[in-house]
Each structure stands twice: as C-alpha cells, then as structure tokens.
Length: 430
Image (cartoon, one colour):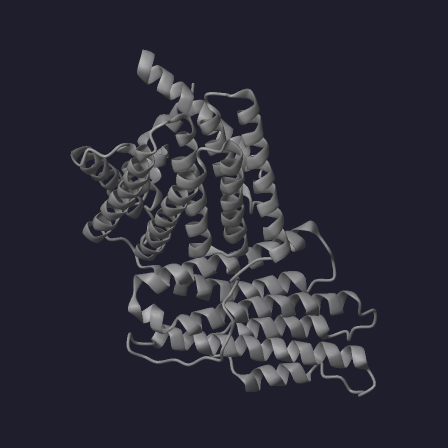
C-alpha cells in the first residue's frame, strides 16, 4: 500500500508557504484574543467576537481595513434597524413580519446593486438585523432587545479590533505590490489572448478564455480597493489604477471586435496572419515604439478607399496597437512613481460601481416574498423555532441573492450545517 500522501511534504500543511503560516498564526491568535476579551467583558455571546475576528481576517492589510469598515458600518446600521423595527412592531406579528421583510429587501437590493464595501455593509446590515430581531419573537421582556443589540455590536467591534491589532503585530505582504504585479501580468496576457482569438477556428476554449479574462480584470478591481486602504501612495494614484483597469477592459473589447471582423472576412489578405503575429511579438517587447508598429501596420494597409471592410479592420487594429502602447506607458509611470508623485491620467468612471438595477430589484422582491411566506407559516403554525427559521431564511436570501446559480452555494451551506450539527452532538454527548 502506498502511503506517500501521508508524508508531511505532501500534506496541505507541508505545502504551505511561510506567508500562509504567518496568516494562519495571526488569524488563530486574533480569534483566541477576541474570545478571551469577550469572556473578560462578560459579553452575551463571546463566540461572536471570535467569529468577527475570523471573518475580517485577510492576507493583506488593505483587505482587513476595507472589510472591517464594512462590517462595523453594517453591524451598527443593522442593530439600529432591529431596535427601530422590533421596538415598534414586535407586538403585532404581521406588522413585524412585513417591516422586517421590507428592511431585508432593501438590504438585498443595495447589496446586489452595489459592489465591494458598500455591498458588504448592506449585507451585514440585513442579516445583523435578522439575527437580533427574529429571536425576540418568543420573549416578553422588551428590555432584552437593547441588551442583545448592544452585545452583538460590542462583540463584532472586539473581534475587528483584535484582527486589526494582530495585523499590526504580524504584518503581511502589500496589496499595492500584488496589484502592480497583477496589472503587468494581465497586460502581457492580453497579447496571448489576442493571439488565441485571432485564429480562424472557433472552439469552446476561446469563449471560456474570453469570459475568464473579463472576470480576472473585474477581480483586480477588488485589489485596487484593498490597495487604496493599504498605503497612501495608492490612494494618490487611485485614478491611474482605475484608468488602467478601464483600458484593459477596452483592449479586451477591441480584441473581440477584431475577431468578429476576421471571422466575417471571406477575402482577407494572404499576409494578414503573419503580420498579426509580428505585431503581437513587437508589442510584447519592453521597448516597443509606434514607429516600428506603424511599419508593420503599413504591410496590411488597405489600397482602396472603397474597401470598407479592410478599412474598418485596419483602423480598428491600429487603435488596438496605440491603446496597448499607451497602457504600457502608463504602467511604466506607475512602476517608476515615488510616494509623492502626482500622475494625472484621463478621467474614467468608477469600474463596476453598480450592477443592473432590474436584477437587483428582482432579488429584493424574492427576499421580500421569502420572508413574508416564512413568517406567515410560522405565525399560522405557532412554531416555537420560527425565529431561527426566519433568521436562516434571511441570511440565505441576503447572502445568495446576487449569485447567478445559488444551488451550489446553498448545497455547501446545508453540508456545513450538517457537519456543525454532528460536531456539536459529538462535543455535547461524546
């Protein structure tokens, strides 16, 4: 029997790097510290402090700061909403159900409409209010509402402060360095992507690669936000970072449009494929210049002004080359910039600031209907565990409202609940 997989160097722990071990150690110490402080302060549910320390834990400084700000804002807003709604509507079950459903629908709409920190804050505001307010339906003492709300907020703040303190004690790599490296790698990969798409055949790999490139560029926007919070140098250069992401998305669009022109060009020049390869090789050079690129473009320049297909393709290809060279210049300026450098790129709107409003509105309607139906069933059956069911329904609706296919996420959630239940049973009775 081959048991080599049990060797230390083949285990996940043996394969982990020094940075990953540092991250795990920092996270474990922060969770233990948060739990100890919560017990020392005699908070209502100390494990919430430990959970908050784990949730805001991130490998980079900017990720911890941005996530902590969103969690603090969402916790305070959610606690305030639960106090207002439960304090005024808890005596009327139907009014309470519709009020909570409306609040959760609003939070779902905001978390689906916006992205990044704003979406995370509204997500927290939604299920924090649900966690505080729904368990109160079986209590008769209204003073418990304030005790639970302030305890939850205190526990969240304790966990966040412990996570931030351990980030200062055991700092990790810079978000800015990771972002600059990702921008350079994506800039080079765009040429490989162009070489793949500018082929006469059509395969599933081409479609998958195109979707992957767009997704990676949008993911880098998260790195930009983390870099914004990690160092003041990247706060000064935030406009340039946003502009570069826009340029990379525009390059992806131009690559796709050139592919469509090539596929619908039955009488393309014979030398067009060799010239395209030469262009991509020239653009990949660090010292590429417009003069050399222009000489290559001249080899496939249209000879007739009436050949509109050739004219459109050539001008589009020239636009791609100038766009790529311009992005290369801005990337060099970003690399060579000092912390006090002032770089003024052309203005560009924020990348992926919000998503489709109709889709976000549909997510809000689904959340409202789910909470109302669950609440109506709990009221009709007088189920003692209705508060827990409503809390789980609210958390699921808010968390998975913006997922295109939530079946996998919901399956993972159910498996996690099953394992947690089994673990709790073993701890209690074993």
